[in-house]
Image 1 (cartoon, protein in one colour):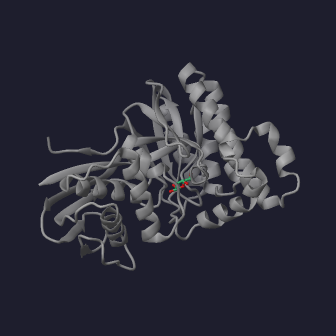
Image 2 (cartoon, protein in one colour):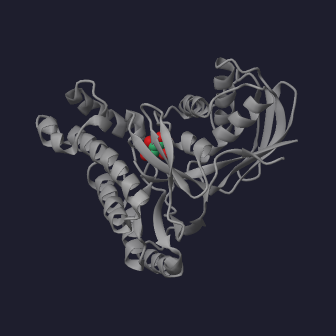
Image 3 (tube, helix red, strand yellow):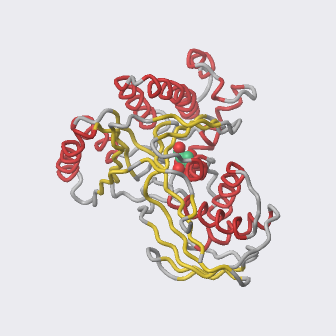
Length: 360
Ligand code: GLA
């Protein structure tokens, strides 16, 4: 029996920057997808304790289900085969304590746990960021979304009590220590979205329409002070998308510095500006997420913003541990009044290590 666990992720800041080779600052959380399986045979047969049905696909990835979570399983097998990994069959079960569609990367955790277990079984040596890239390709193969590498990289590179600063262009990364007297609250709005049906691809296309003004430069190398001139002749929508990306990359740099220097007031300002930019320039928040962020701040959170792709999902709040109960209560009371139709869930998360074997 082989057992692996891949965590979900929450992104501290650096939203919608990964698909233009920018900077991100995610964490792995203490919730994820666990795989328990017996290896062997030429089929991957998996049951899920949390999702419908059984998946039964060829271990070489040659079969492609058209719907459901089996698409991710088959896509991982196919990408591993294309990368030169010998096919390995397995019979097993998946358990997840990650809410789906909450912006916590349940699909990336599934891809990472499978790819890690299969590569391990085949003794296929794959460096961490190559495995992340392979899982990213699997996501695209499975559901056609042009997402970046952040989610899979966070699930692999995460470290307890640290965030991962990843440059998605150079693939250089370093771990940034987080304040040990703070808790990460994830408040899930109960509004479900799937990347494949959200406006993710549309936003990427609008952003792509602005990129020619950079003359081939990576947006993360553009200074905020250059923006007025660069955006002057662009239509409004592409200009907003690019302004978000350029300012967001800068906020990631500043957040790293603020964390390293313990400047938590600055963190509050950076998270607030990041959320506002996702609301006004990238336009992926929804009123429920905007309200949750306000409530978290009203309740005394140090810093709060939406996390993930948007159009639903969750916010994160960094909260001093003395204030966690008060922040939770303020969020519950206020959200219940404003949006009684949505099932709010609040998770207190620890910042965890990345994917790992559980059996010795
Ligand atoms: C989703 C994608 C990521 C990233 C975020 C937004 O989670 O899978 O690649 O683009 O949205 O930051």
